[in-house]
Image (cartoon, rainbow, N blue to C red; front, side, top):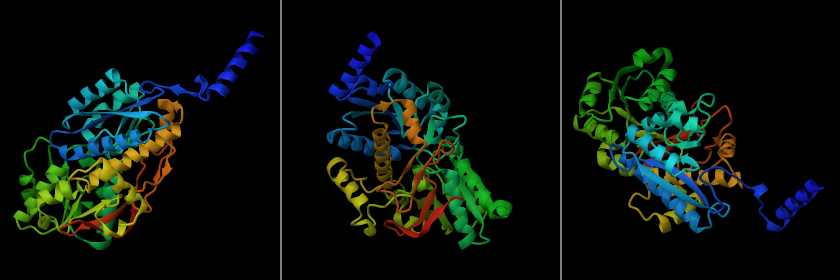
Length: 400
């Protein structure tokens, strides 16, 4: 009899109250009115060009909150600076998880810092998602089920470039500048995989730099001396710009590729000198706000509305701003799909069953994951810098 009464009371609570305790399941960082999201960005240091990503995301969540939040909950976006230093990343992530008690980590930027925290966050079972790094280590659900990238795989990106070179520059030799960490080594792996048996003939120079280096001048001289026809510039923005400028200054005229990480007009091409950067090729999955073909595009119109009200920043047309906006848009969708089951387990359930397109990404770019595939974006389209902006050419290319 007592159990029957209790069941009846529970039913009444659900029916009359609209939202009952039985319908809500929360983990740390979530209340009826708030969702705490943790983030780390290099607001200072050698990769501070990426700070604009964090600023764009903060602006997006401000917009979202003014529109009512997600299922009536406001986003509390807590973003700290790590200076692109792994020890600082560890310190700040511990602060986010243990002191701020965030629900999840979103879009922590940089391969070295994310690598330093990967074991810790997986032991804590905290979603470490939309990672802003394309290292292959994020696609390892068996060992690290709580870590998933958003940035396309560096290895996949390199495979796309190598496939293009094989088709359009057969027999041409390649010299490579790369960052001496997982970032650079993953790009090298992708190039070698496609060149395969030819790699020893095709790749005539592989020269690394350290994040602590002041310049990459000596590396450029070393690569040039090997006489390659094609120069691969696998560097973060500061060093990518230095390399493009130095290539021009020494009178070297190779076909140049730059990684998508540095496909920024504001942060790389202008500092390098637009004339020096003319002809540089890269790959993208995002629309360029300055490209006339997107003038009446619905997705870009939404982006421009956001920019006008919430991000009147000189870098508003920068690719990194588009990236931050797109990632924040996708996270909002994931959280909305969670409904009132705002648990970390449910977040990962949603993350491992993604099937979406984002309005600021190129038509044909499909975002898909599964419990066995943690690589959401695996397609690119190539583009070439014309001295003012990047122009798309060719069609969407997959990495397979």
